Image 1 (cartoon, rainbow, N blue to C red):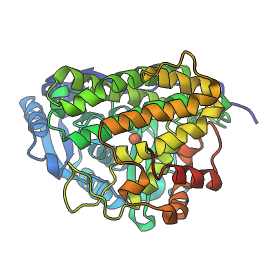
Image 2: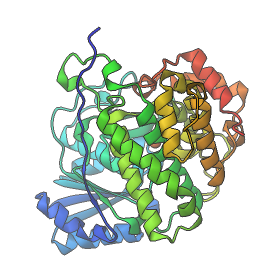
Image 3: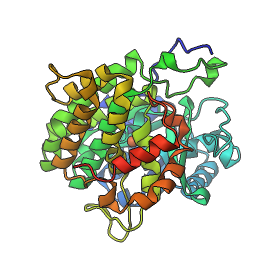
Length: 425
Ligand SMILES: [Fe+2]
């Protein structure tokens, strides 16, 4: 087997600063857009970031049309509704305002309105056909309002495929927004638990990008076009992910407890973007792969700070609940990188032995989870050993990410990882 010997760094242009949302009219004008779809979810319809965006676009005489039908947890149905809106609207540009769901919805709407096809055409295999996107999309700018997904820098759009009760997505460099507007003023009103979950999501993005299988241990693509966006750990993703781990570890507890601290909140938001560049190029692996069935199979759990009556294991929570077991499992593949990551999180690893690496990194993640009020393992959000077979079944189709684990994880290994994630402390 010929191994990969190249990697790329793809990223959106980023504009960072308090108040930069007001520049969105100029940004879209500069891209030559005259008729723009602004995509958000219903909760944000009347929010400051959406109002500012609409004003700024109209201020530059751009014909801006608001679509607030993005679902907080997007599905194939919610994507299709947005696609229909986009196809009818004949837009020449897109702005997404919101969390990962709004951004992912805008990516899908832009893709299918620009390159019409049956819905499953571009969806990741094995669920979809995974046909490469035929060309560039219309310009899209992303304005994140949560500090957690990094979706403004990635070419990935995730949704629930309702028929199969599975999370899947579309992944192509063509989906990447041309710019991310990262404005700390847009994240001021996040509830505590939302800030904690999104912060831990980005921490896990960065830790997984650092510890993923190295790019040069993956098989070489048969054609350069088939080189995946998630390339495995590489020297460029390493830089962005490392810095993100440091910044989040240093600021997250403080930000959750003091949401009014603009400077610290700005650091976490910037770190989310760094982590997005890290994992958007390097990839994520088991903690993300295992999180999808955890979120998909939720029964009654409703976290504080989220809408009542809507059972949910938020994405960032689902990801971090699995992370300690995952890093114990992956550490033997490369103890040094796991110790390095623990060091970035503030652990003294000067005297640590290689065989302690997994435990030390898992301990650092658990410590941070406890300090920001995460539940104690999968059992605390309603799962038990009887659910493990189904959880494994839901993880196996996520091989686009799980194959980036530095240690192969088949059904038996996944089973043990879920059992080890039931109770964390
Ligand atoms: Fe994530």
